[in-house]
Length: 142
Ligand code: FES
Image 1 (cartoon, rainbow, N blue to C red):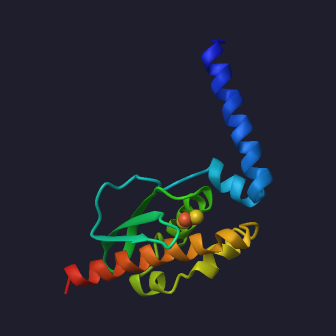
Image 2: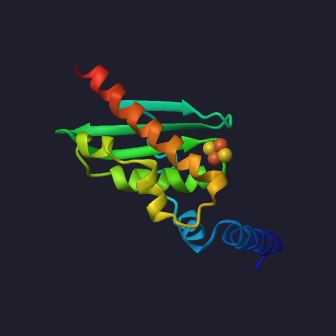
């Protein structure tokens, strides 16, 4: 096995360990099974929000027959935001627009109970971007 591969594996292991120590097993699990990150370059609806912390989240939705049939997000934010984005997209996929509008930061936090209080706002930021994306879809399809 080449040295670069072993070095990269060591770094990945160390990062995973630190994420689990800092945030908990639930966050580490999502981090290691990330979906929806930057998978859709454009959507039928797009929401972009920058939080008070200065981090930005974008969500793109593809809608067919009032159902979110595909969804993607991007963020320059923290690890909590990255995993919250994944969970929020997972919750919204396959839902009607009305159902997805009701997804809240609290719903995301229920799936990620070890997110520390100092990062709970990240879940709310992600859901605001989701709601913006739904609003943008409505605006474009009136
Ligand atoms: Fe800014 Fe997580 S979104 S700290």
